[in-house]
Length: 367
Image (cartoon, rainbow, N blue to C red; front, top):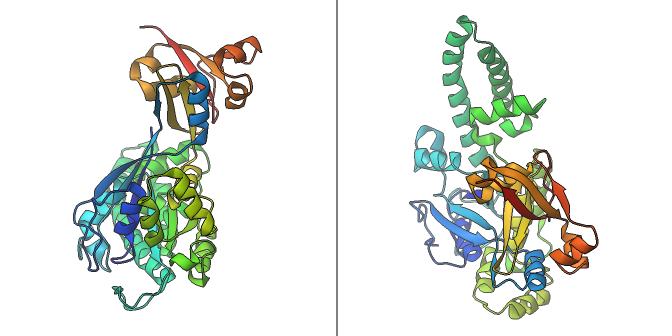
């Protein structure tokens, strides 16, 4: 399992340029006018993970299969989207289908690239998009209340709990704050929040699109975005979409590395987005390794072994017996499965085992 991130923002902030760079394709038309992206483009990107390469080398795996990350390039939003302006309804509908939002904000000056608002102000841009999402959430919750009221009159206990949560959400939204500012009291309440399918409850990663000169350190505009993110349970990273486009043209990894080092960058923008995205969504990776293939699988933190097995195939979860488990560090230190077994580092784990990041697993299941 990977995760699906929707790339959003005002027109002409660099969404499609970033999408092209990240997916190393020209599928999204990057042009200097609003709505150059009409239908959402989806790009599947292999998640780079050095651990997978080392595991494959030790096991002599013939094939290496990384986990996948989906990027969805969504049409630019304008004021009034919550009322159907521009491509508003389509925009909002597309956002509902993603796991997290990558909000691209323009943090560079360029007289040759127009801005829909006429001024470069990433905080104002962020607030424009967030306001439209909040208005949509308020409308959704208000409509939901009438149905809940009918259920409450019928003595529906869950409806009473949900109504309390809806009122709480509305209070936060009407104060001009996103729904993700509401922290669930427990797992049950989090399930109810998820059922509401609020746009502003989705995790947000702010991507500050800076100039090539500011790619390493950012600038005053990106610093303001970082401050904003810190106040609302969000994350921000700095990327130069133009620079990422150049890097994407380099096929040789060593050439890419040298290019990045010359610019004072440790990794590509893709690497930073993935790292931030994984942390944002509380995802981890486990591995299956053998002579035929070494493969990475992404799951949410705190996933139990049967459900982790189900990511490979539903039959694995249904018939789960146990998992042969080796920690990544032990697999590397003892040079593979046999060495780990000889060192007593392979464990047999049952249905209650919570999979850890980096685990190398082999599932046993009944047909």
